[in-house]
Image (cartoon, rainbow, N blue to C red; front, side, top):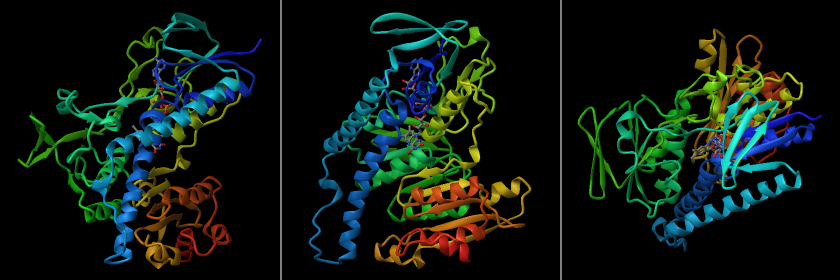
Length: 454
Ligand SMILES: Cc1cc2nc3c(=O)[nH]c(=O)nc-3n(C[C@H](O)[C@H](O)[C@H](O)COP(=O)(O)OP(=O)(O)OC[C@H]3O[C@@H](n4cnc5c(N)ncnc54)[C@H](O)[C@@H]3O)c2cc1C
């Protein structure tokens, strides 16, 4: 008899796990309470990239006007854009991708249970949905239920009058001024997008810098670029009061500064929402960071796995997918582990950011002696030809034998280039190995070659 497996959540953690389990011969079903594709497809990665691409095209028009100088014939500006059409484009992209995902599940004959799932006993899940209640027994289960936007205490009381990364996609109007709370990846991507659409953007962050944990050279380059375009950062600042009156929303900072906007987007964290999931009865502990798992993605109940955002290890879609596949393979007898060191971390703003492996500071904190090498896009032919000279490639090597330990890339197609270095980190390649690759000319990848030769 094949192994009965149930998956809760059809986001990028759950659906690749289902596909892998089916491939390996399990009897698999997947429960989804909302939209197939999870946060990533419906309220995260994909819609935000559709928004960003629209913004980037507007930005490119502005750039073209400057490049071709006065009377360029380029006759387009951000305020000519129809906000409704920007949203419609995003909706179309989601529908297309969701439909092909649903078709794939039909073709693979994987059972999809529509409704909210909860553990109702040892080895049993109850799904409550449009068709009423369905009970399913399982030999193993994968919890892939994700996270939701969370609000810091002061903002929580005003939650309904503020917006979050779920609701921002459906704002009825484009705001004139937007205050973004949180300078992490989500906050910065929305800042970049709305700024390109001509919105006045302020970003408030309680930490002293943007993109927590990122290399200071990277954060400085991104800040400088954003500030040049008019985005204003308020870093290391704490909000102490909120006032909402008429259409105006005002946040007061500790130092008395008042930041007023038509909309406030709170992008200051996400939390697992596991209330009512029945985990307590199974003896599984969890907190707002999520459910604890071991390196095999197992919770303290060995037949229950937790993957993706819900385990709090790495709130990224590609981490969720890899963890989902690992859990699927382990359920079917493998002993695979998740390698967090090779997860690319990307910001899809302009300039883009891609980083992988260790930063200099992280390596030194581990007691490793390292050296870094940096090459700027300014010196790269393709970058000059395409007017993409912002940013650099920075490589981190072990001082002892020049093994590649990590990289931080700002500018150009950083989110694509970073995969070359991810491979080098995974395979423990040395500087000399990467130098043997022939880098096509003219490409932005030549900046990697330059950094290797420094
Ligand atoms: C604005 C934004 C932009 C982002 N951009 C990127 C990006 O560019 N790249 C990137 O890697 N990551 C990005 N992320 C993060 C990414 O979306 C998440 O890391 C990813 O979606 C996590 O996948 P998951 O499967 O763990 O959870 P989710 O995608 O949240 O899926 C969980 C699913 O479980 C369902 N569910 C929950 N509880 C139940 C229940 N009881 N019963 C049945 N179903 C249930 C939910 O409805 C949901 O569909 C972004 C996030 C946001 C908010």
